[in-house]
Image (cartoon, rainbow, N blue to C red; front, side, top):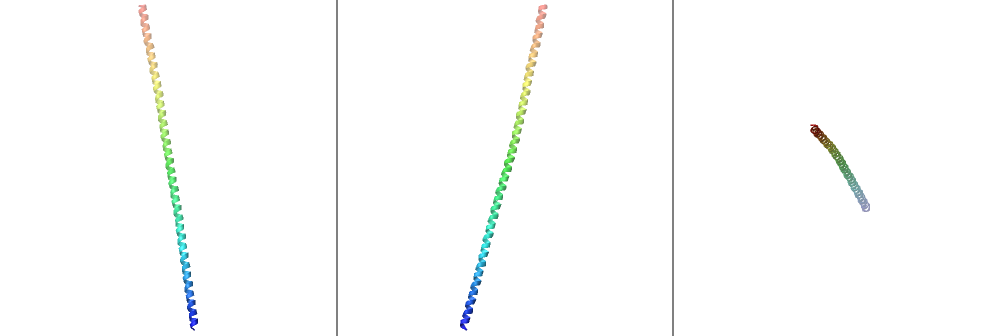
Length: 124
């Protein structure tokens, strides 16, 4: 009788040990799942970080493009100003030439007046 009782006790102990083993296994599985979750979170965070970096690069590229556009506009403005200056210079040149032409005409007219005066004196 005692032998059977000891046997049942040993069986109960083995069952408790199997239960503890199952519990340890479940805990190990929960720990592995926590680790997998942590890994997934890390992967997601790395992906978010890469996306932030890509967005930052896109923003910097947009800014560089805007700066190129602004610089192009400034260059076009400078070229228009140079063209206006060349046009003003052409107008000044034409005006100087006109002034010289008027001065030559005036001198020729004065010379004709003096010539007529000399002619008049000679005939007089």
